[in-house]
Image (cartoon, rainbow, N blue to C red; front, side, top):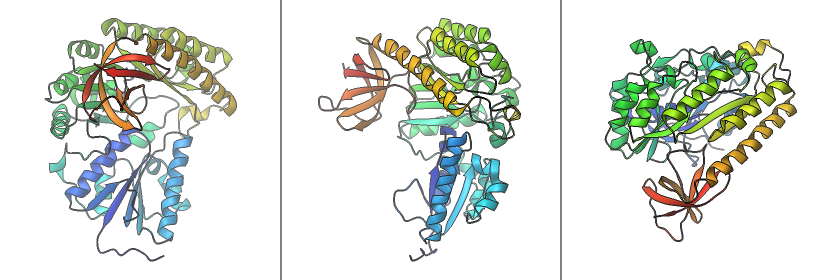
Length: 436
C-alpha cells in the first residue's frame, strides 16, 4: 500500500485509561492546534500520518489493552497507513526501557510529564498563553478538571507514584481561570479529578485547601454542578463537607476509594486507617451532608486476604450501603510493596469474590433506587440513544454511575440541558423518569 506523503502533518491522538489521561490528551490536542497543526482525537478516518497513543499502565487488563493498541498502529505503520507512531502516558513512563527493546517500530516514547518534549518532536512549542484552555473530547456540557498530578501516598498495591510521580497541586487561580474558560464554552458541570484530591494544596499552601478551591470554583458563573472524585479517606478535610452543604452547585456526591473493609487488609495495603475509622468517617459524611451519594472502589484478592477478611469486607459493604460501588480483582504490580508478597489468592477466587460483592451491591442499589420512585430530580441530559434520552442526577458521575432514562418519543429534550424529571420506575442501575 502506498505510504502517505508527509507534506502536511495530521496527528491522531488515541487515549486509553482514565479521565486523567483524557485531560492530558485534551491539553496535547489544544497545544497542537494552537501551533497550527491539524490534530484530531480518536479519528475514525484513516487520514492521519502521525499517531500519538496515550497509554494506561494501571493494572494487567489496561496494560494489555495499551500494548494491543500500540501493536495495531505499528502494523498500520508497516502497511504504510501511517508514518510515525509515538507513545506517551503511564505505560510508557513505567516500562519505557523494556518496551523500546520489544517494540522497536515505535518512533519515540514519552513519559507522563514529557509534554514539552513530545510537542518538540511534533515540531510544536509549548504555548504558555494556552494555559487553562482546553478542547474537549467528551460532550461539551461537562469537563474533567485535573486539580493535581501525582501521589505521595504509600499504598502497597499501587503503581501510580511510579508512573505519575509525587503530588503537585495546581494553583487555585490557574484552576479558576480554566473553569471560567470552560464555562464560557458551554461547560455546566466540572468533575474534579486527581490521584488524591484530599491532599490538594499541602505542597503549595502548606495546608489542605480543597475547601477553598471548591468555594472559588463554586463562584464561577455558568457552572451549575461541581463533582468531587478520588478523595483519599485518611486525613480527609472535613471542612469540605461544610462547603458542600452550603453551596447549591456543589453536588452532594463524593468518590472516596476505600479499597477494603478489613483492618488487617487495610494495614497490609498501607492505607493508614482502620475499618472503625473508615466507618466513622462515612457516618460523619452522611451526618454533615444527609442526602449525599457515596461512591467507593474496593480490591478483592490482595495477598493475605483469606475467606475471613473477605467476609469482613462483604459485611462492611452490607453495613455501609454505598450508593455506588466498583470492585476490582487485585493485580500483582511490579515494584510495589505488595509485589514482594506472594500473590496467594487464585484468579478464579478473586473473580468469585468480585462477583459476590457486586451481587450484594446490585441488591443495595435496587433498594436505594426504588426509594426514589415518585421523587423529582434535576437531571442533566448527556445523550440520546435509540428511543431514549439518557441523563444523570447530581448523585451520578458520567460512565460509571446510574443513569436516568426518558422516553424520546414523548419528550423533546436537548443534549446538555437540565430538566426536572419525576422518577416513575427503577432498576438496579437505572431510573425511568418523566419530565415535569
